[in-house]
Image (cartoon, rainbow, N blue to C red):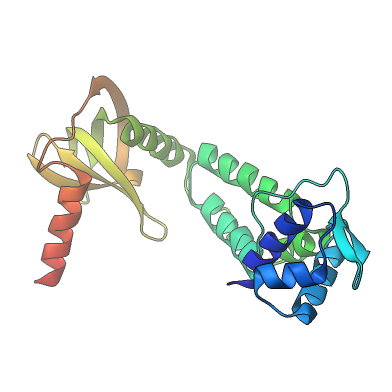
Length: 229
């Protein structure tokens, strides 16, 4: 059992009884008394209001609400770093959702852990997507979610402009470049479009069904087969 999981269970055991002895906790968690004493001390140090002492028993102070998740310091650090990278290369709406989610996570961390996580010296400067590409990415994300057909004006690498009617299947990030994987009704095949080369993007009122041979799963199978050859 991971230590973070054991600490979570320890708090649950203590809060479920009026008084829990160290011997009871050690038996339930299948650890030594010394481990129980150390874990209780660590939880108290992190701000969990466990009252009592060794040889007497423990109880949880009133008014304490256990966060739905407990993170290790390394996990909290990773979430902060990942959110910084994500916010630099996604559309504004999704970036705000990431920031909001991270704020909720940080709010339930012990103060010392929160400060340490926010102090991570790894940043992703916000030089990512321009406003038009962000708006296109947001529209395509929405279209994928509800399976809406999309009409695109697309400028290919040869600077040839074409209009496509597509079934958007997935948005992929390649490190500085986002692409759209879609079923193209003009070519009657899967196609990949660079989102920064889409000059117009209109979501149509028409939805598309999950039709065999034209789904994301079908595309992934093709990619895997081609990669194995």
